[in-house]
Length: 126
Image 1 (cartoon, rainbow, N blue to C red):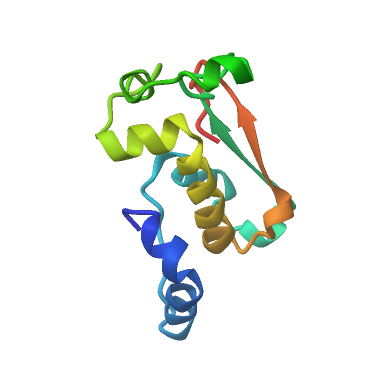
Image 2 (cartoon, rainbow, N blue to C red):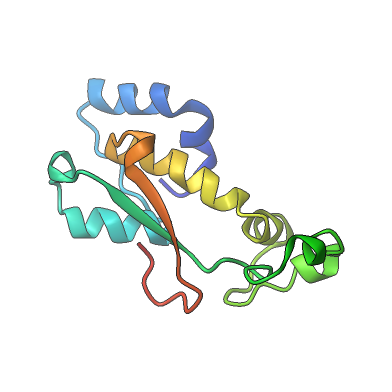
């Protein structure tokens, strides 16, 4: 699976089709690929998942500072060079929300058992 949007919008349909056709969905996105590789086909044994996030460019901003954020500031990601949409999604943590939904479907994990850990160094991907 090369994009998260498919699972976010149609996860139940895609997972059911994969099951009916004995197909395996292999995640390419770095966070989910890291989890998939660690689980090595044993996802039913996992009790929780941890997704990492850099925290974005506004991680240490106060609420007052956040009120004055500009688009230009949001487009300066501290760790990665990406397209405009995913950079804005990342800066607002919307992208992480989408990744939580993706992890829910890929690993059949209840939402309450998927946690996000802020890891500004971006060394560990999940």
